[in-house]
Image 1 (tube, helix red, strand yellow):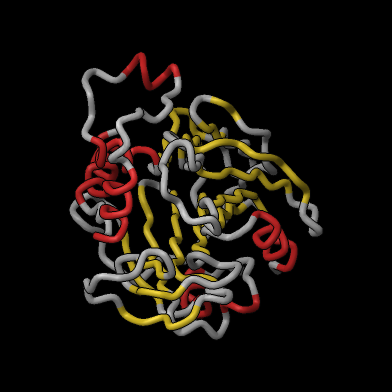
Image 2: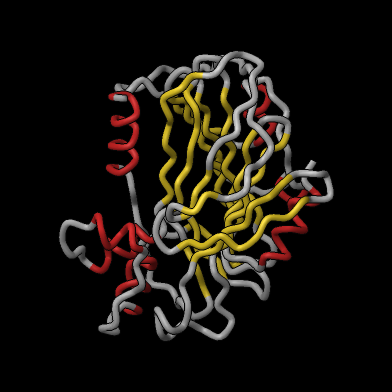
Length: 289
C-alpha cells in the first residue's frame, strides 16, 4: 500500500492546471449558487473547500488497486464506478506479458518513459495495440508510459486525435480567446465544428500474475450515460461531465461536454476522452483496429 500511496502523492504533486482552465472555472463559478453534490460528498466533506479545489475535484479520476491477487490466465472483471454507481461490466482484463522497458525505476519504484510514436512504444513493449488510423501521421502526439507495482502499466497518449481542430501551435502561456480556442499544457488550438479539444487515449495493461485487482472510481461531476456494443463486439461504457448552463452560467451555445468511453479489447483496457460529440467518438471506436 505504501507503493500506491507514493504513486498517488507523486501524481498529486505533479498536477498542473493550465491558466486557461483556471480562468474559465473561476469566471464561471462567480454565481453564488452551489453546485450539486452527491450524498457521499455531503457526508464525507469535513469542511468547505475553495471553489477552484472543488472544480479540480470535479474532474478527478482515481484508479484504485484492490487487495486480492489473481492467477495467471484468470479473467479479471474490473469494477468501474461513477460516484458510487457501478457501471455495467466490460469484457475481462487479462495478464498480458510485456517486454522490459529500458529505463531505471524512480524513487517510488515506478518506471517511466516517453515515446514519439505508437510504433516505438509497441516495439519496445512487444505488444500490439488497437489504434485509430488518423493518429498514425499525427506530429503532435505525446506518449507517456508508466509501470507501477508488479505489473500495472499505464499508457497516456495525449493529442491522440485532432479531428477538425486548426491552428495548432505550442502554448507559451499567452492569453487565448476562450470563446474560440482551447489549450492544454503543451498546445493551443482553434476549436473546430466537431472537435472542441483533442481526443486523448489511455491504455491500462496488467502484465504480471501477481498484480492486484484494478478498480476505478470517477468522482465529482460525471454521469453514466449508456453502454453500447461496438461493431467489433466490444462492450463500451459512456460517461460525460455534468457541466450545464444551470450550473456554470455563460457557457457558449456550441459547448460540448467532455466524454469518456471505456472498453476492454483482447484483455487490455482503453479509455478515449475528449470534448467531442458522443456519436463522433462511437464512430472512432468502431474503426479502431
